[in-house]
Image (cartoon, rainbow, N blue to C red; front, side, top):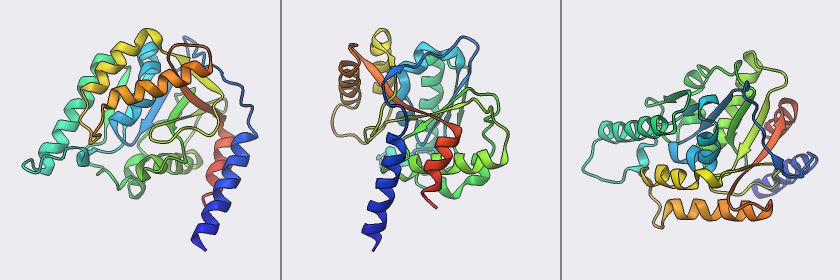
Length: 244
């Protein structure tokens, strides 16, 4: 029964997503526009959109919504020490990226974001023209929770009616891409940022990420690109409604 319901849900999500115009176009962020990017962990954010952030750093606010402590596998370290390592990583990376604003949710444990709306609702969304977040079909439960919690926040808090929701890809590729950013000039810096992050990947993390960027670039006749699914607020609400 659960398998049937899951397949039914996925088919409805895909049908809705594919109803959106899907020709990939450059994501042209205007000088006066502001961007908020949300993610479960620091590496999720910068692997998916590090190049875009670096190209538009003064326009970006970055929020890592969990402490990501499980990514530190050293058993000799305490919980507090692991959280501090992750917080220091976030601050170092956002400083190097020169973002407008950065916030690390050190009191939200990795894997428990869906239960922390009390913390999530402190996110201010009214100032932003673009809100970046993980693809709602991501398997990681924290990344999926970002979309569901944002949908609840939109019901309660003011936001710009013209604002765009921008899904990015972390551990699963987007089923539909209609926006991209050419990141060739920031590839080296993005790789350096990713190499400074602790994660449990057994293979070369930054190399794997840049391989996806290389593929996405080839799809739009560029050397390296980051791919996105850009939706209006109402389209985003429709997708989230399917999860009820």
